[in-house]
Image (cartoon, rainbow, N blue to C red; front, side, top):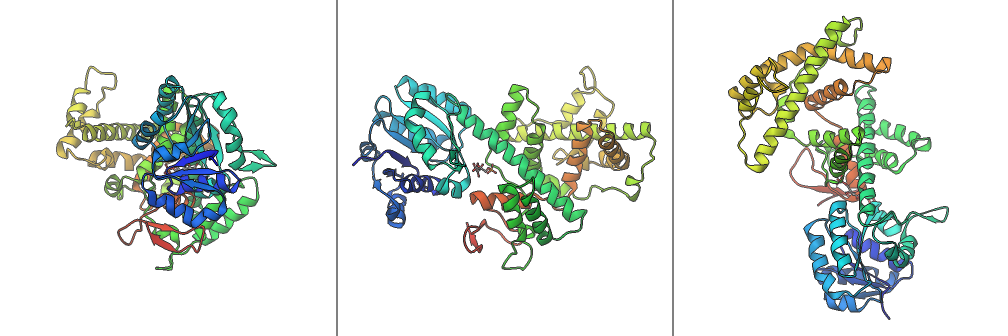
Length: 474
Ligand code: 6PG
């Protein structure tokens, strides 16, 4: 008997996809770089269906019926190219290589074109739903040729999630279309998570609710129009109590949200297309801000609002001047930080003070205050943020009450002020002692076992959310 489908790469996602195919009555060929994982899968789950384990790529390929369908489930990037290089020479015309990882759609387009030349179908396929989804029914977004879908589609539809019997799987479009759509799915996922985190933060900081109470609020919301997986798991994460300290779980997680890159890719692609995905972009930047402990530590003493901030009635003209100056400072702080980051990344050794100096005249952004920027970097070339330089700190803290009034007025009057508002949020984000990024880490650990760090000791940890909810070292 030959297998209808094969899976190479048997870490948790690959293993669960293989089990899902087998549970649906398909014979599944198995392969992994090291045989141990293959053996383990058959030992633990062999009773769930029919598996054909192989130690070598050759045996694996030989165990598949034609046209062959080979699902690749390895870490996106170089590993994918290595697997393709290993398998493509063993395959024959009409066979399919299905990349189920989170690949960049441009890589998928490149790989598809190269394999098409060799008579092979390369099917870049988005798979969403984490470990649980892979096992019980993910949402599947295959790209690649129409012809490949005719042969592969029914199998994928079989293992996909269903709504009223309808499979959550459709041929998205040619070459990289599937991975593009999966990428945008993840961008939206980032935005969803950021918005939920902000809602939690407001309920806690302004509303004065404890995490367990907020869990109940989210549970209630989950019954209404906000009903969704992310709201549901947020309630679970918020009600979790750390066994060791008895504190809310969300308080022991380091508040630096990590990312594997799909959200960032979405924003990069949107920039190329000229599409304003500002919500997704803010969520990517919020993670980046949370994950920069050096700048956050330096900015932790930036002043917050004074009691007068909310007391309306400011002089609008004077307020707008202040908001403009403060927001402008934020823009320059961000731009200089980007220059410093690129300089470090590419070894350019750029002197930021010199950049400010040469921008003082001639160029479009020439401005008086570049003198102060120059002075700030001359004083401390490694300044983590312009905002913490004395001159700018004074300027921004002097302006901030007016700045807050302007943003609030704009919101109240329905006037779009995205520049002022996001600059203010950046300022408040940098100076926050604690960000709701910890909740995002909890959500990521819940659905993807992406792990988190603790505030009270070194190491990386995972909570067994699907089982006893105990914590294990990762
Ligand atoms: C999914 C998830 C999945 C994964 C992300 C997490 O759709 O099942 O999006 O693909 O958990 O890679 O992304 P970050 O590590 O970037 O948060």
